[in-house]
Length: 143
Image (tube, rainbow, N blue to C red; front, side, top):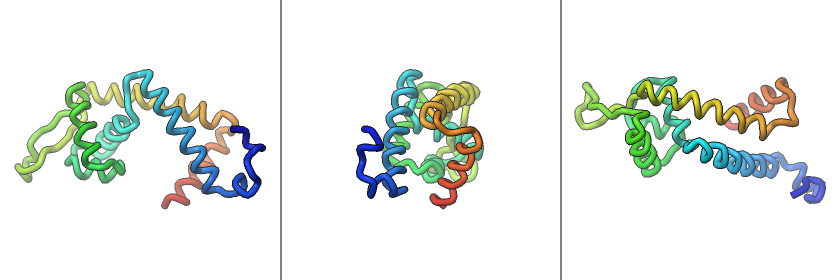
């Protein structure tokens, strides 16, 4: 779709532009992650564990905005691949703690590199400063 063929009343709506950009980003992420046998949710979970440390499945899902049924499936995949480990929580035996493994840390780096390529493809028409500004503005709008 060519932007100039879109009605001006749509082109001037940030909500419409964000929606179309998000759809393009989602497609690019799916393509690039698929090429390395990854998923965006894998990256989110591994990044949360790297930044915040071991935590419960529920808390990781909340931090990443991932539904619990999806979290269960993603953790099953990540566990099978050796990227995370489940251990009993020493303070509450009824729940497990999810921990990032050394293999998972290496996988996070690979997925991070992959997502950096997506950012470059998605935002190739923006300068580094404009990318930073866009990120700051979108963060403010989301907050």
